[in-house]
Length: 234
Ligand code: APR
Image (cartoon, rainbow, N blue to C red; front, side, top):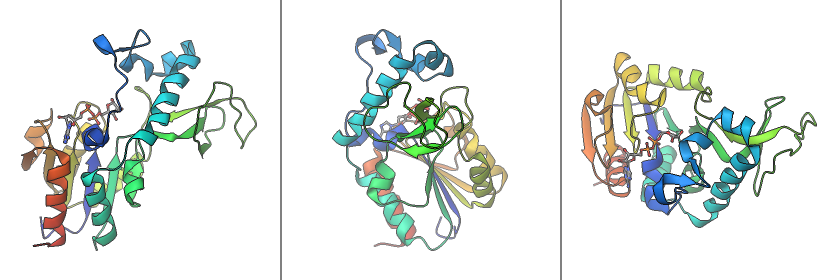
């Protein structure tokens, strides 16, 4: 690991789990009578935009109740101090990596604090509620929607991610179940290009078999220890 220069880190919901409750699943896993998985779809947006917007309004508002934890802080320190290439790719739509201070990162599944114009594709920072029919400042169309990559939509920045994976000599996956593609396939892409692969997760993920090394435990403990190791702390 110490010989690595180019690092790609993939994070998922597990890295934010210790930052506070961010779940909206009620009894039976439903929210306002819908499965959460069925809200994050283009079909749901077309069928009931008010419901989908309300769901993301609540999640956006809930960002104020959570804070970065030790795992986010450690990755931000790696970002600041790592002399080689680093790309932190998060599947999370919260803003905890950037609030911890990370800059060499991207949100492949979109961001809660952003709005996307369905008419012109413009993305703009957004805070507070986003009612259906909100007008895009760039093109004037009343077509703003949550800037979230729904199931069946293409994640952001795949070209940049693929390029970084091709150059990586270390790929680290943190707090993700390995159930959702294309992120679940990054470990194999990184290996194909010769990277060593490390998984830091509470439980074995669906892709555990693809990692050279897996450490099981809470991100708030495992990530700071790994970053200390990478930066050569005693
Ligand atoms: N520390 C480390 N890992 C944890 C912790 C923790 N404190 N708590 C939970 N985990 C692990 C779980 O064991 C699980 O493997 O984090 C993983 C979270 O898995 P998911 O809930 O499936 O989240 P994620 O992999 O990010 O989901 C991928 O699916 O819901 C869609 O688009 C959404 O980006 C999301 C994508």
